[in-house]
Length: 185
Image (cartoon, rainbow, N blue to C red):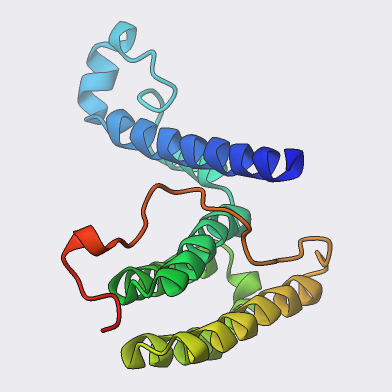
């Protein structure tokens, strides 16, 4: 149980760090002339420096494929629970976000592209089960995705990062009868 709480806390910390970096990036994107004219007002870590230097800072903070994997891990869990709840719209949403995250991760770290491409057939299979709203096929396709993730980690020489299905929810989002949707759709 301590391990689950630690994992949940780690994911929350990663999410907060990612959000903080994004907010800092947006708030730090000021006009270069304004920064040069008012250096005393630009004590923000991203507001000062030449554009190239600022982009270098953002790149360091967003890092490489590991940040993409942190997001995929979160969305994998949400996708799993969406299937358990038969919340097909939420499942579709997370499938789309996983695709976007992988695409962005490859853009940041092209050397991960070959291994990362492994995920697409598993995502395609899951997408079909979501369209069919078939919980049995969804469960099978999720096993396929989990196995693909672990195969990719082995190919990237990080087999110690072993994906399993979540044992508890980390998000407060859950399908319920009160949401106004028919759960069996």
